[in-house]
Image 1 (spheres, rainbow, N blue to C red):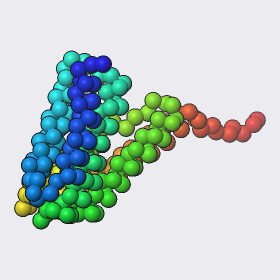
Image 2: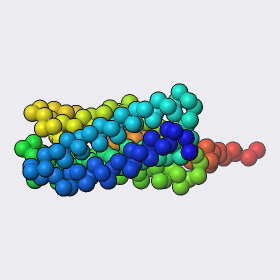
Image 3: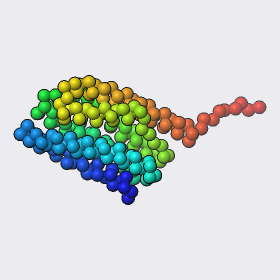
Image 4: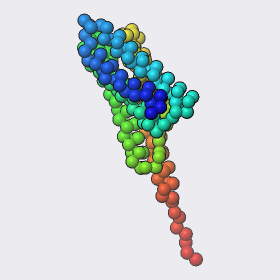
Length: 196
């Protein structure tokens, strides 16, 4: 196991601790909110370090290619789901339901699409795009803004929602195009020629 893989595992292991802080948070236990924020930021920083090490030391592995996006999805999905619950109960600025549903829907689309591509056994992959990277960035900023009760958090979550929607459509189109191209390659079109 490479050092980059170990950092990715740290990110996955940090998820239940982050969730626990949100579940047990109450106004009387204010420190749990900041502990959750610290764990979340540590996970984000570890993601950056993980990617840098994998590239600079040429430690990119098949395990890393699977675990890294899995860690990101686990962190962000649980953050949105449990932050929605906690913010509705205790925060003056709470995560909107429409954004939670948008984030979950996009990730379901990506998960189903990736499963279909994997099932073809053709080695097809949907690589991260700039739309996806912007989505991840603004989703992370939304989590931080809600935890810190940033007065203009709505601006950030609207940007997160817009980019989440756009990237979801973009990934879906990319996946369909990859499958269509693969199908055309596997089953080339034939033309009938008139005899004589």
